[in-house]
Length: 308
Ligand code: UDP
Ligand code: MG
Image 1: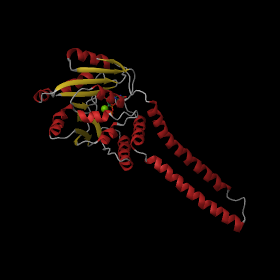
Image 2: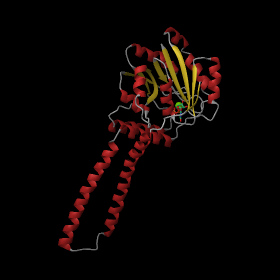
Image 3: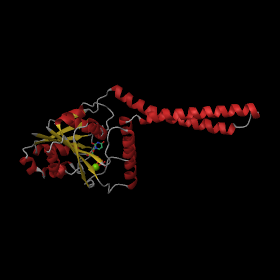
Image 4: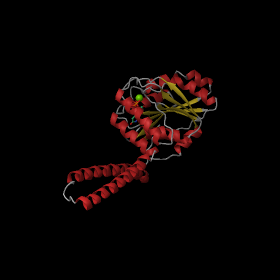
């Protein structure tokens, strides 16, 4: 049996060989289970020495593979590429910064042996993370689970061990705007969740700013829910009803009390409010349209510059 380990790397030169060492602490376990290994580093257009490091590692260890992108395509593209290029009967993906501890692998395999198709991980604490980030992350998961039918678990990591059939199912979802946490949930299969305390990144810095996370969450909502569109339609209905009420009010007042010039201030307020709401709604529709536009173009999700 072959196990593919997929590691997306974006400027992780300090972590490449360190990750290898940590993973290999499971060597006895791999041997005992008769597992061959292929370790795929997906270099997501790093500008530092990541590629050099991987090549260096490859010289000493034959099971190392490198896929190098022509530019930074994002972690989602790196995951997809890793899945596509992997040949393993089992596939696991882990971050290069060791926030996904390789020491959990034996436990994960235990559940695969028990008959689960995939073993997913979630962190139970968010310690070491800025408090506002944690707060917004929690709100995001709450909202997401209200408006989407796909289950998206709070604190879920992308760290997952899967059987080949699950990976093939994920690959069959060829969308351009990829939100893995949703895709994993969407394909289903019998999944065991295991929990662990948050581990801080060993070296280097996180690649996600608050705003890039915000953009990612919008991506998630648009990819897995059309609730915002329903909300927009409802808002339209509410404002129509309100307008009808106002028309009646103005008509009746004009007929019985004759006061043609009063009320212009309120008119200005109403016009501003409604035009604001309209722009908001067009914006929401625009978000869906822009994602659809990108899907329709059908561009490749990544471009490989070098593969070893
Ligand atoms: N990553 C990537 N492409 C990107 C950003 C990140 O391949 O554009 C990789 C990164 O090298 C790491 C993993 O995705 O292995 C998780 O990134 P990071 O640790 O910065 O995110 P965090 O753990 O802070 O959520
Ligand atoms: Mg990290």
